[in-house]
Length: 244
Image 1 (cartoon, rainbow, N blue to C red):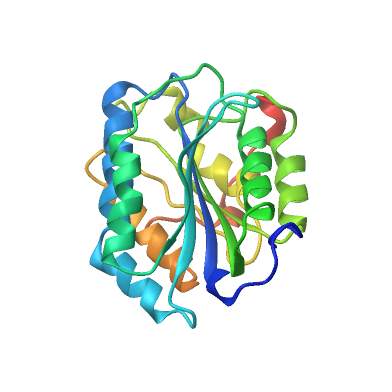
Image 2 (image 1 turned 45 degrees about the horizontal axis):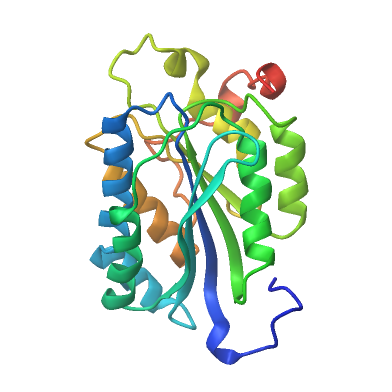
């Protein structure tokens, strides 16, 4: 889906164009942000992730890491980079590890999705698949309807996967009461093979990220049944526009 400003170059062919879109709203405290950063660094440099890349027909992926908050609050922490081996993975991960932490006020999943797809459409790469990997610890509360934006972005040819963050230890937090995992399933993810993996503890963050990245790079679908998931048909649907 590369922009016409770039001429075709076989070196720019990749198995996946992947946007890591990471929530930095103020509900994420400093400790959680540090856990989040460390989790991505560990996953991106893991043997499982690198092995998954090698399985692809081309053997390389293009990745960018964007932090987001409210409408038009998007920060490219690590720009598009081709990862094909341990060295390129370590170089990309180091940009994430070394960037200063920042925090913003609002949570516009809709705006983050739109920006993520813009990044995919205006890079130099030609991916066999295009994936937006969006994490967040709350619902969309700015920027219009998240489901309308989700549907528009999926129609452009991307798959949107979710990482709902439910790491607060208190089960009575608004995240748990809202059923944030169900919100992501019903309102945020979409496209071929899309899935969401909830993160329920800081200890489990790195494992969830690694599992998610491997599945995205390898083009795997979740097995059924899976302990991470509850069948949507077995519960009440989420009212997606409740917070828009």
